[in-house]
Length: 196
Image 1 (spheres, rainbow, N blue to C red):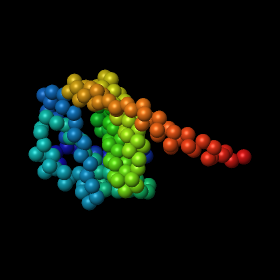
Image 2 (tube, rainbow, N blue to C red):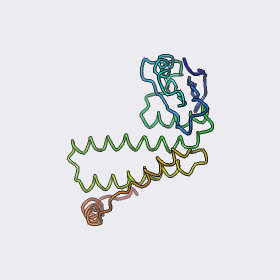
Image 3 (cartoon, helix red, strand yellow):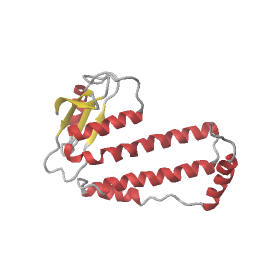
Image 4 (cartoon, rainbow, N blue to C red):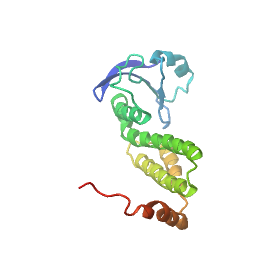
């Protein structure tokens, strides 16, 4: 293994994690997080890590129930894994911990956006609904990029990347918004009643 393997406790769970430090002259390169899958322990990532750019810091861990990490309490989804990663990064890499949560949120947005697009084809969802959903997806993505940009530990190369993300704007369409409101929101007025 090319990094020191250690046991850390995150959210009451024991995880095995390792960090392969980057060279001192890394010049602001962000760390690389490797997440192994079922049947793969940290040690199996060694040959891959040795081939990676030595300037880049590499963070690896055994997810719950894999390798030397404790079993999970039950099934977990992608968002649960990201929350676990967000809680783990401050433990294994304290200097860059502050942007792990917004980065996890950005990752979740990408996953959910892909799931939405796949379901749209199956359910034949109205394009007005899809466009309005992606209006908030784009704005949320930019919001989390701003949180990373504004962090004291964010490096200049990372700020440049976040700035490019923040400049991506949703295209407003007032007529589409009005149609959506009329056909999908106002149409439900009076359909639901509170329980006594």
